[in-house]
Length: 359
Image (tube, rainbow, N blue to C red):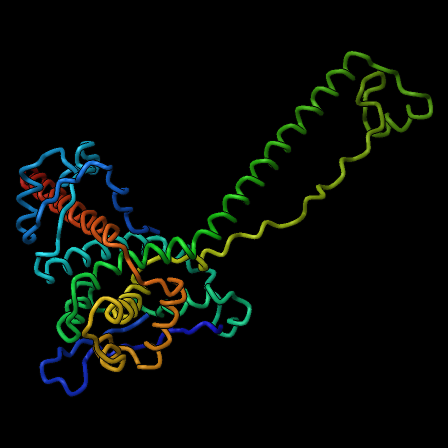
């Protein structure tokens, strides 16, 4: 499967839409936080979240909880935050905030991760899975923010909140599927290097013990070797007078093959917009009874129709065509999203207070 590289420009203005925004979009390590594990047999406490201001008030009224601290109390693991009643715009804002945090963190490692990016003409030498991953990688970072992009999609292709929340689930699944192999290879390489290092450390110790034994029993050189030893500048009657072959050159000349980090699936600013529009296209058809044509999704997303069709297929392949999300898993991601947003609000308030005190 050949790798598909992104086009240089993405037009995010739907045709024949007088209300469309004229937004130009030039196209181009952190993974998603794991949601809480499955709740214990005891019925979890359900908190119906109304809107973002409700989350802020909950975070302020519960100091030390999982809403205001990364290490919440143990009882917080039995609290579930139900977001189905929230305005979808507020859910989009939380999803955008999390994805923005992830991409900005991973962007710091972009040069290191993608310095081994294979050229377009080398697509025959990469695996189909790597080809699917590289299909989402653009040449440049789009100028439109993730929040604006999600709001744009919701405006011209409105759908249910499950579609936007499921993006987090799909990205996690893709990360696990793609990165499990390279991570295992990396672990094996580290183990091999550790064993080799231990072996190299044991070698000099054995040589030192042999030299110590030789120093205890000094043997005078044979007459035939005396001249040779003197010519070498060695002192007769010492262990150095013995003729010693020069140590052989290290036979371990095999070069270590560095793991190609470009084969990892990492959500960053170079692929997030394509991942989002492809994910929304797939999820809308699965979760919602009302969805749109790929032509409309392509216009709203600023991509040519053939490219979106290709990305949709790659998205399905990287998810093993498994779009179903159990209700419990979706609820767990909703709880994780509320907790993330609450912590961000608390952190922002702390930073504001610190700046105020400093000034």
